[in-house]
Length: 448
Image (cartoon, rainbow, N blue to C red):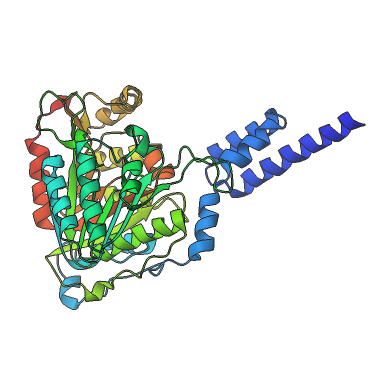
């Protein structure tokens, strides 16, 4: 009788877990995989699914924020007639792409920004530290890796001094990313009284053991007026001036001034509320921020807490709107089939497609996976270039020398489906000219 009851319970658990996966998983491959785990591994399979397979993050996010963001679901920029007729928005391809972005993202494209590229830690870190040292009201910092080496300690010292001046300081570090150095930087910050917390610490309780779901965003805002974002973490590895260092990483970060800084601050506030339950003061209204330049920018938050995988839509939409040239730089290139089709389709339409990849990856298995896709891309005249060491960690997508997508996202399934990412859409001739010059100046080897 006991064996019969146990069998019934195991079958019921398997059916319940498999049914939940069928109803809630959006990727058919993921659905099928979880159903097989639940059915073929009695007892343990359903337990694995409930611990690892259920997205409690989206549910928890809805409970805290509601389904509506601080920004309307289809926030449209209040264009003046002059701006609406300006290039590239007057072009049919970018007009349709702008319509896509307006409805996929949660924030409007805002004019009046100045965005400055900062190459490597030699340019980025002094600028960031100077902004922190001059902060008067608040400093919000989010990063994936925060090392406890010399660079990390310089940031900790600046943050501690800001706190002593009465500045509101909040630091968010990914729970896995902080383990890249020991002792972890969080320990030093807590000794200094800095308010710091981990993003998605490992737990078997309500949040689940989300080893794959990482906080990959890099955001720094100061007084709601200056913002920084891009692909650069905090650590000595981004200082490339020392040729003896074997861990040097080339990267580019971006300094932002203007109305869109409020969107960086808004993204940080959402993550901080999710991680700690503390609701930070409302972000400054973009209308109150003075125009600083000619760049049109939009902040894009993406991750497993969102309703859909918006980066896939944005990237494929941008590639589809290209008429002349597509330039992609990424350290991790493991494209999904729709992206491969989009790039090959663009090349067959006569668009010049260029992809810049590191010749030696810090993750060898990524190189092996990448090479499996290159033959198909090269077959349709996509141009691929390898960049010799140091390892290039930059993430850039440039379309027709008119549009750029910059930020933390790599072109691999982890970034597009699992990580919490933050990117900027940018329409700015000066920035894009600078980035294109940077791409062309890099040493590269053509792959044929």
